[in-house]
Image (cartoon, rainbow over all chains, first blue to last red; front, side):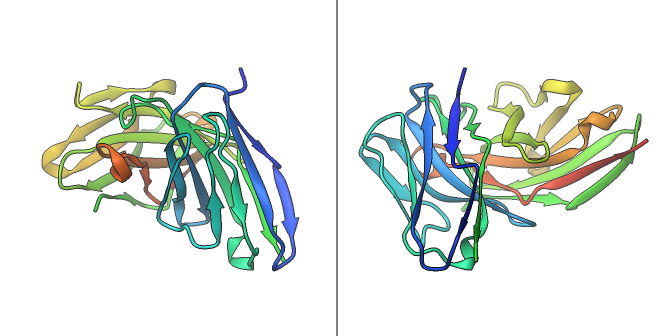
Amino acid sequence: NAGVTQTPKFQVLKTGQSMTLQCAQDMNHEYMSWYRQDPGMGLRLIHYSVGAGITDQGEVPNGYNVSRSTTEDFPLRLLSAAPSQTSVYFCASSSRDYPTGELFFGEGSRLTVL
Amino acid sequence: AQSVTQLGSHVSVSEGALVLLRCNYSSSVPPYLFWYVQYPNQGLQLLLKYTSAATLVKGINGFEAEFKKSETSFHLTKPSAHMSDAAEYFCASRNYGGSQGNLIFGKGTKLSVKP
């Protein structure tokens, strides 16, 4: 009963390095999204996808790339990490019955950029 | 554009007291509304949701929320707080398809429960 799986759980990067946060779901959900959570800011949407091959920008997309080659996977790429990208990142998915359907969240990936 | 406002970033109650967490939404049409809870170092899990079927919505762990269109509110309540309710709570709204189908979150309210 995996649900939404995020890896890694913790990562430390140096400024300018690149990396990919992985997200996989086993519920055959069409909708997937990435949020970042910062103290006092709630969760802000970075990118989202409504199906394989379809992605779009959210509220704070700068510095991040995504792709959706399969229904199951939705990786988030940091192109050149900056200290402002220090945050906790959450991947979430929901079924075709969004917007009424529940959004299922992964356990988060805590990223520190030095 | 839709938005969600949670009044009070921190709320402290005594065990056994009423819990009231406030949420107001802004949307051109009544959105779908959700309350999520986040325990320390965990992801978010759904407490309850309003999808226009009934204005009073009951959720898990004894929580409920009432949708009031006239007040554009969706406040979360629980009659008697328990120590295990200490967590951060997020109100969120979601509208119809396309980019409006994305979940928009409030900034969260951290609930502390005193023994």
